[in-house]
Image (cartoon, rainbow, N blue to C red; front, top):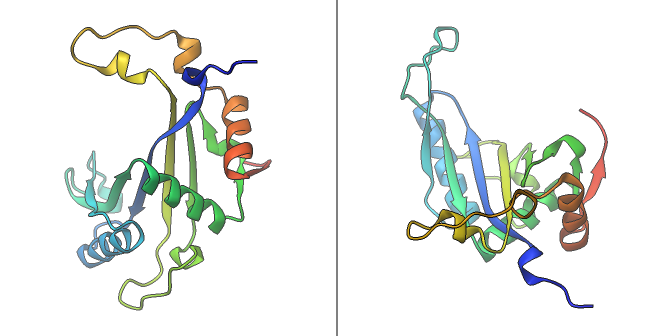
Length: 173
């Protein structure tokens, strides 16, 4: 039986996000940590709205973020899943994506504690897609992709994660 290569699920990108708050030194430490983990420079995240209770102004720096693609993204995804013992919560799987957190960066393999950085956790968001996504996104002659091809169901994504990354599912909130 022939398998359609366009229907195969692929890792599109992995976004690593470390939310800190308004401490400038902690944000620089978060950027340093992302550089240490990925060998890529991190950008800063800005607050989208004003929140007087948290003493946040609109446009204030509140964290560090980096987007990875290709083999580097797959490597980071494997390392972060390994830090969580290859288990994810069922609520972590959304439409075309997987979201989970790592409580402390020292759980990642090959990373040692750095007293300058301190203890930081991070959020990982992995986006998945199928072949042909560019057809819809390109500027010249964009096409239309059927919803059944564009959207990857939870069960389908879970099967991919089990097969490719040896992920186990836990139930809970």
